[in-house]
Image 1 (cartoon, rainbow, N blue to C red):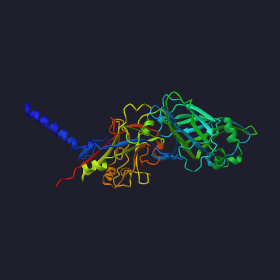
Image 2 (cartoon, one colour; image 1 turned 90 degrees about the vertical axis):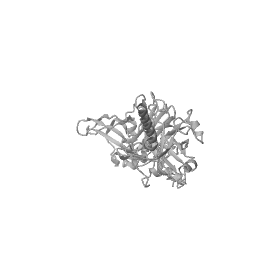
Image 3 (cartoon, rainbow, N blue to C red; image 1 turned 60 degrees about the vertical axis):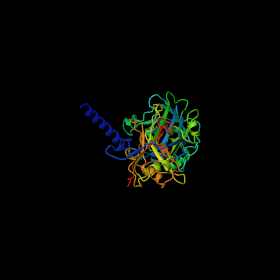
Length: 476
């Protein structure tokens, strides 16, 4: 009786071990649990990995995703990362006249009670919301942002005289209460969406906007040519208490609100609020300083390394290659049917330091023969092998439970094996978490300030893995 139980137990264990090789759907989070894929798992494909500086990107009139809609955004950043060094993003912003029409210059005695630059939060804030005391400075531009492509390397000319400044803690999810002026009625307290409010010098506003020559206020275009716009930058010496962060601000909701009293010759007092909205063109200057970091050595390694560094805001990307695909793997697979190919990326332990958590989403793209960025087949909705962009589709989303990213790249690997496609370069970079309609591969990193320290080649304990599930060809 004891022998028969032992034999049964041995049989069950054997069946379990064998079935684990026959059910590769248990490999990878990107597989829908309702799917069953039978086949053989190959997980020994070699991968070469290197860290590269990302290309410069156009930051003129960026559009991002918010609540399923496309919105105008611009980044504003200053943060000090213990691994990635210092990142800075400054903004050049045009202003228009109220309602984009002629602004009637007030007559009589004008008293400006206050002027506030309102900057409304967008999504994708990345950084510290607890300890850092941010201080933002406002200057007047000396050059007008035009309707042309400005790269993140553009340095903007501005008047060094400070016209506005304000200190605050980042509250991207907290509404604010503001006293709203109601013409002909009692002012009221109103709850508004999350925003930053920076006081602007009232004398400057009075003399340079309200009481300027009427010909400069006849409309938005005339005002933009005269006033040029605003330059926004964090005060590096006064942003203290924490590492800082990156803000994405909604351009269409930004405005310079001026509250003033106008006393006529008859003694009548009108209380007025005039809003000069962000209008026209805007752009961002983005800078990264890697001095004294491990990234300097990583950038000089052109072969392969055990660690790769990915950073948004046109910072860093990883180049990956599969050198054994065309030789060993192709020979091993022969005429086998390729069921699934899945790339798994793992963050290096100890690098996920609050508030610098792993980027919530990555993108993956390739070079074509002209060294231009293009979609891989599995991310291209025009390709018959495209599934979706969701986590159970193409993937790229961070799973905090498993501490992994997954990309399903069956079509791409299939094309590389067959020789239909040549690997001119394959890349990984942070991307906008909220964009679920397309894969960003041109300026995707502009919409994410996230970063990632990931395992690279086989020398890393957190190495990248390419899992291939295939059905061996039948032998007749």
